[in-house]
Length: 349
Image 1 (tube, rainbow, N blue to C red):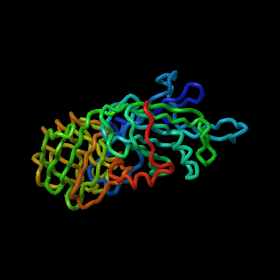
Image 2: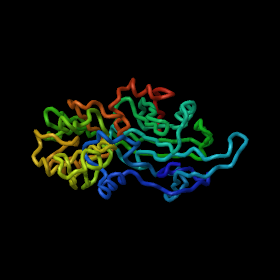
Image 3: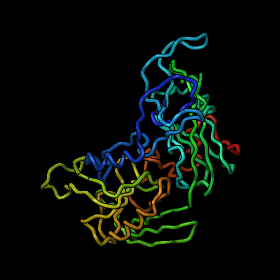
Image 4: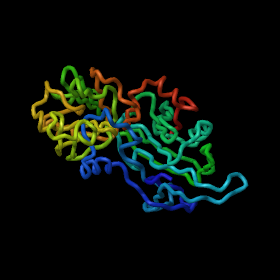
């Protein structure tokens, strides 16, 4: 089951909850396992919030874990471990930015032959109808996004009606899940790496124009649109953790704790202040985007999970769309090519 997903109350399976959302950033602070350059790191599924929303009637504490126990046989299915969800993002009740996808992580692989049925069981409803589609990044992760950014103020619900749904590998769902969230204000950020500038917009009106440092030629920043994953007031960053250098004598070695950090990728791209470049506008980073102390504090205060940050002009190329929540890096044709049921218009909630 979804470790942080609420379930229907009548299925009797219980486990432990695991909270991923802010924990990714908290873990980075505690473990020093993050940095700017992420070329040697590989995205490993969602790195942001996971959901905690049982269907009506279930208690807040009734949050199942991965579960390895078997379910009993029935006339229609064999005995065996159940089809479970690991995480659903965004968190139930959250308010997120206009580029936030719905991300579902399955505990066990879903066979290609079963994905159409699974997609049909994952119902997305919205207060304002939009056209969207699922996209399978792997056998254990499927994300849903609208064709264009979400309209601000949209109320969204995801109902995973997985009871008795097969995953094609001998497992069957034993309960349903419900999550609901709201799309907040339309905050969008653009970064022109060659020009060393960042512009922040609210509802299409520019609010701020910042000088920045993006990645150097050796450690370029990803291009593409990355939905902000989360933020932390400080993050411990080390060059060793991302395989740049563990040698303190190396010019690229660093072991620092830096303030006002907004995470863009699972593999370690942040917008933040850097003590090495207190006056940005011309230097190169190890892949992160550097702002001045005052500017980074402002950006942090106005950052929300799901707000898009679009970077252009770097030599690195597009960020993988599953490196965090970079769904809108892919064009619509590419996105729906990863779906088994194609584009659908949502029903009104």
